[in-house]
Length: 60
Image 1 (cartoon, helix red, strand yellow):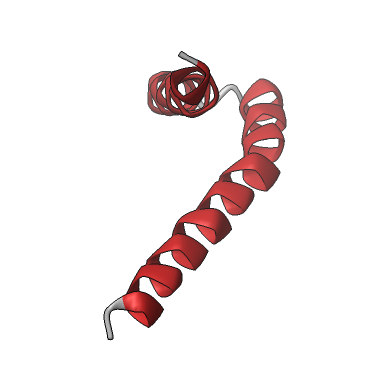
Image 2 (spheres, helix red, strand yellow; image 1 turned 30 degrees about the vertical axis):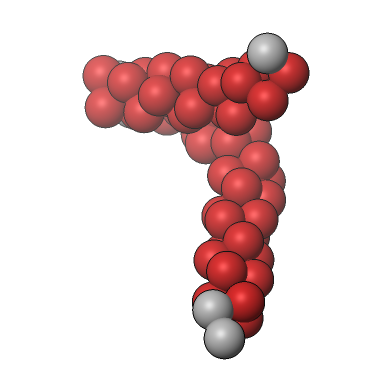
């Protein structure tokens, strides 16, 4: 049965999404305090785009 595999994948996606949502503000604050620079800014931008697409795409 392929059903448990699908559930496992969905669980993994859900967990990674929750981890992203939890870590996102932490990374932002760290970036503001440490001024890490281009890498963090680029990653922050990618995260924002990713989160935005996750929340915008299903509503279309």
